[in-house]
Structures are given as structure tokens and as C-alpha cells.
Length: 381
Image (cartoon, rainbow, N blue to C red):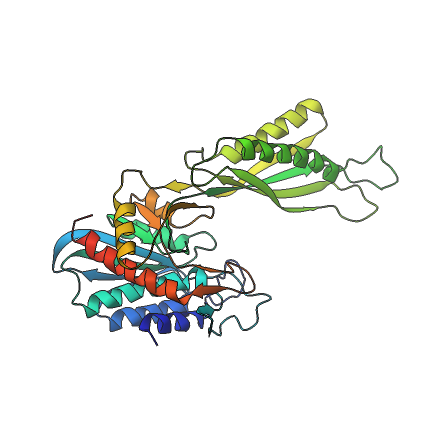
């Protein structure tokens, strides 16, 4: 078996479900250990740094024989949960695909970037520059791994090997999480004069949020990412059938575009609540910011996308320049002044009950990354 695909199968067989998403899950310690072993076997310098208890980042370095630019490959070790999956950690190859939790998101990309390192080592290493390979924890939750890694390691450019169907993603959306709390007054269901319904009041909020989403969808669109959007994610309220609900809690997600303010969603929701208070003096509600990650776009003049496109073409790919609707650690690298793009193998089943990566794509991605490392570190983008 091809060493890169053999590594991929081993990685898929390791449970690395994010414990911040699934309490009690194993986390990334076992898969980080396997990556560290791979790096040591390749003769790379290896740094293992615990970001949270039992959750280590692994960073490996391949130095060239002479100084030159530094290129980083970055991928995350964690996966989402496996509820509803049949044998999620049993990698199965069928019809050119490898199935299992994390196969596409993103152990295929991890295998490709370490496969590229293997090819470089087997060919005698790098003539110039440095290649940094970062395998980080927690991307599926709060990206504490990428934040910790970017605070310690520098690079002139980076490729995040998230699944892109072998296209080059130069931009992706961000997100903002907001909580809305409407308040009522508890009373017996037979006494409307004494009660105030917090759930019906939330209905007014939802009506305005739906109108806001329609305005966002018809508003200015990014050429690669389309329009901004929002959706109601979760809602809870009420105590029992014969009681006026005294509280209703809604959580929403606002997907953002590059250049939008970090508090765009909160300001929009606060504006809706202010309007509802003006219409009804008895309306009580507040909005709270929960968490956000900014959208990202590499500078249009940066040479990395073109350099990667040529490297990918030399490996047999025909990449398009695209944007991704999901968020990624590229935004954290970009904020740390490491210009980044996304490039990884294709497949299907992100976060679903049946996930796979295309085996040929993993090999093509590896070969493209190998060619990119040689071109970029030589200083001839």
C-alpha cells in the first residue's frame, strides 16, 4: 500500500473525537502520538506541546541546507462525534474511497502533508528554506490548538489542508454566535391578565430575524463566498403546559463576509430588540455575544495561490480559485500575519453518518504539496 494511504488508514482508525464537543471523548493524544512517531521516523525535528490536558499540538520541521523562505502546512487532528455511525474507526477502502470518521475532515489532508514530507526526505530534503508541519487540536470547537501554535511558530505562508476538492480556497466565511433572552411573567394558564408569554415575544424576534436574513441574502455578495446569512440554531423556553412561560432563550448564528465588523450580528440583533421595545413598552429582552471567528481572505497580490496552482498543475491537478462557506484555522494564521490558503482532497460526508475521502485526491494533494514546498522554499514563487 502507498505509505501515505497506509498512514491515512492508521489515522482514521484512531479515535480523536473532540472532548469539548462530546464530553468524555478521547481527544487528540493518541493521534498526536502517532504523528510524532511518523515525524521521528522521517528524521524531522519534533515539538509536542500540550495546549490543554491530554491535548497536544505536534509541530515538525524540515530544514533546508541553506536559509530561505518558510512554508507551513497545517491541519487539525480532532473530529466531530460519531453518534449514529457504524464502525466509525474501521477504515474501509471501496471504489477508490476510504471511509471512516475524519477521513475527509481532515485526516486525508493530514496524511497528504506528512506524505509530502516523506517524499521530500526520500529525495534528499530541501535545498533551501524550511517546511513546518503543524498538526493542531480543537479546530472543531474553539481552535485553541491553532491559536497556541500561531503564537509560537512563524512562516512566510501556509497551506491549510482542509478538504477543497483540490481547488485553492483563497477566502472563507466567518461566524458570530449570539444569544437572545426574552422575558415574561409566570402565571397559571387560566389567568392571562397575570401572565406574560416569553415564547410569543420571542416569536416577534424570530419574525424580524427572518426578514433580516432575507435582506442579507439579497444584499451585496462576495464574488467567491456569496451573501452573508443567519439562522436560528437552538431555542428553549417554558416550564409546563398550564403555565405562562417566564423565559425563552434563542441562539443564532450569523455567517459573515470578509470586511464585516466583528460585532455585526450583535448590532443587528440589538437593533431589532430596540425596535420591539419602542413598539411595546412591556417587551423585555436582551442580546448577548457568545463567540465569533472572523472571515478571511488572502491579499489578492500575494503569490502563494499562483505558486500553488502551478505546483498542483505539475502534479496533475486543475485547481480553480474558490471560496469556502465554512470557517477554518486559516483565519487564525492570517491574523498572525501568516498568509494562508486552503487546499486539500475531496470526498463527502463532512460531519455526517457516512464520511469518505477520495484516495486518488489524497495522493494528488500530497504530490502538489511536495512540488509547492520545493518551489516556495527555493525563493522562486
